[in-house]
Length: 176
Image 1 (tube, helix red, strand yellow):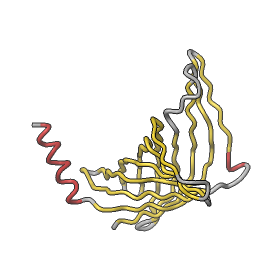
Image 2 (tube, one colour):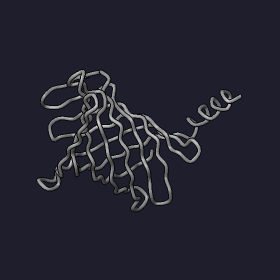
Image 3 (cartoon, one colour):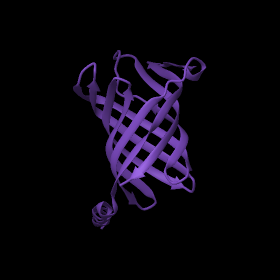
Image 4 (cartoon, one colour):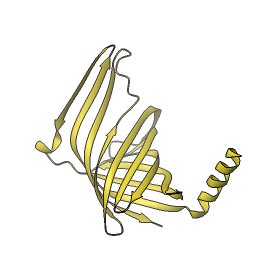
């Protein structure tokens, strides 16, 4: 019975789904890394805004739909650094709580780069979880904070390093 109900919910969701484009700027605020080796651990970070403001143009194109009060979707997310761009597949869930929006996404597994340096497709077990909270200003603009990390990078079999970044973000969300 539970399986039939789940199939009905997921089969009905595409009839209410639509295309979505998020575009804006992400500014790293604090960058750090957590390291774990055996029983020892360390965590270090530094304030990026103290030295420079580095805005990264961001784009996410997705297909999304509502499942109850939660918006879920999947698509491509990426950043551009002037002459080179990087994109990866992403799935996300988002909850709107009045003017506040909580957004959780997980991307990775494949990365496409293109630009002046060259074009490439790389696959592997690297994933990027990202949690952010936004405040809606008007119908389409959002301003907020988030944290993202990179999982799956193995520098040494005995050492686990998890890089992370806290960021400030402003973006427009457009539905088609």
